[in-house]
Length: 267
Image 1 (cartoon, rainbow, N blue to C red):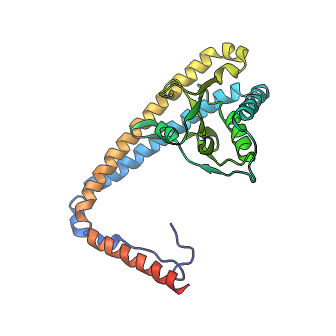
Image 2 (image 1 turned 135 degrees about the vertical axis):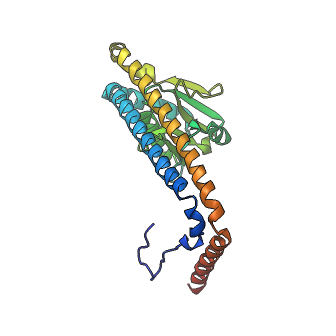
Image 3 (image 1 turned 90 degrees about the vertical axis):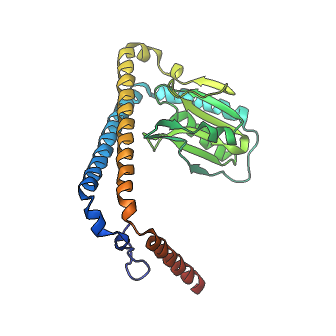
């Protein structure tokens, strides 16, 4: 992070003085190999994720039509009329929180977070990533009635909602796919796939199957690359850590904290 006004209100923090540079020379070849290797693994992971996202986007473009969006909006209005009674004095607000991600451990989703906040869960069975339209309508309706919502973006498409939590109503809407199902019996289940145009689904069955298979393989390859990157990064830390004076690092941190506190006292 670059300081906006160096020396005036911000300063560079140089922790390079905490290295034992002479000792690092003895592991120089290993350091260079790990540094180059883990960056290459991250690049491979990003390429795979980009390709998977492009395939998923093609599928979504095929299936999302004005008719489907109208159908989802109508269904959302029906849910809102049933689940939300009355209106608040002021509109609610939305915060964004990821419910899962694509990590070196695999594609993860923290369903426990949902269970901790919401006792009633609508499972949106969503093989093709269609949930965003319905979730947007549900979030807008809940906020209009005065409820705060937690909008959970899709890790591959952060501008799209994948899940919605309304803690004040103990209500959640979780989109699921066959590989990541809701682990319990849901309060209600809505099959979003069945809302898509049946003729398009039948005509494109082979294409959809191929896209899902290739996308899954790309995600698997991305996870493998992330796992390799983490292993190399761990090795890199193992090479560096014995040659870092952490007492000096912590001392520098304490000095920075004291400087912040002094500024606060002068206000």
